[in-house]
Image (cartoon, rainbow, N blue to C red):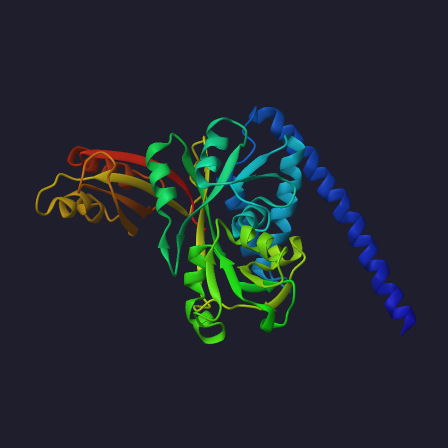
Length: 354
């Protein structure tokens, strides 16, 4: 038995040696590419193609999720050899936005916590961050209006998207619920856990208090044993809180969609999405006429969201996601026809689908 263990361990050591050499070789090649790209470090189309190709080659026992995690970190390390990269997100440390950054970009990026979604956009526009991560939609609570409004106003583009499963936890200094008199969290998280809270901490016995973010709620809970916070497992780790209950969201499929924002155009990856915002004339049937070119050119629309226009009272703009890349002929033709019909049209970006 001892000889068998020793033999297997020797084989593992040999594989580790080979892996180290191969990763270093890859890093050296990445440095060479960095010199040729001249400042373009993040290539979401290329990274999406790499991950999809490796998942197709994967025969296990690693799952596709494991393969994605492994090679996201390898690409993150190699990207850092080209040039340091800073990504802005809605902070403070311990938010789901930070988790989305690390899941997508890996742990080698420099993260920049911001106090608001507005600040995330500003940091990227000013060049203090190369990219930003902003929440845009939750499967339970719907669209994040602030992000949509800023996409309409800014010159930044959507470069990618992340779909992050959201698992909420109840955190406190003491795991015993008898100490809890107030529960703090972001309004969306309170809504996502509404029924669980009604069952376990009904009003008015335990008050519910809105905070700027889940991480801010965790910071408050870390200073007061009568306060609990609804936040992530990461927040419990950061602010040294006990996890009183896990997975307390009402819908176990609860997912938040995040957007990667930046200044670059993204080439086709083979599995893409295009986002746009437009407005129609205020006449009967205008929105139907505006969308008809999509059907005529066999372009699939995956999302439609309306928002009040800031330009005029009782007028609306429509945010649309369609399947495919702006460079595809049928999409280019459909958008050309929409531009002729619309009173306003802005392409927000073409990027790899999550």
